[in-house]
Image 1: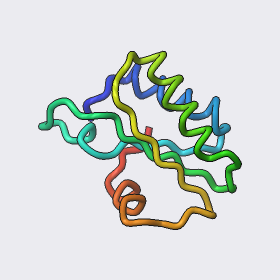
Image 2: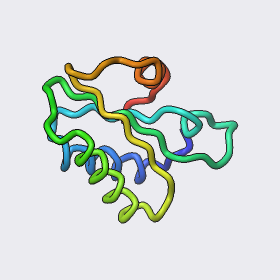
Image 3: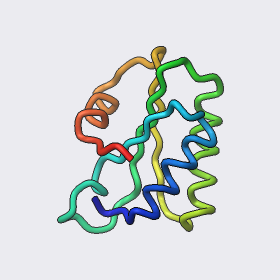
Image 4: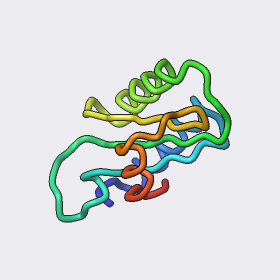
Length: 99
């Protein structure tokens, strides 16, 4: 994975601040490919309970991460029991690496 252990900890802890301690956070996409270069940070946040204000919280996560990690592109998918599972969600869960 092309994220330092410090960056992984920041991402995991920030997701817990916003979504609560039961959140599972995974990185997927180009950052899990050690042979790739560049690329944004693609995250999928999974929750066992429905989350209110999903979009607002996803944007909060991006904003806090950009403040803590520096301005870089970060994409966040949020999945809870009410989420309609699209192919992108399924692929992210299948290929993602848990933080």
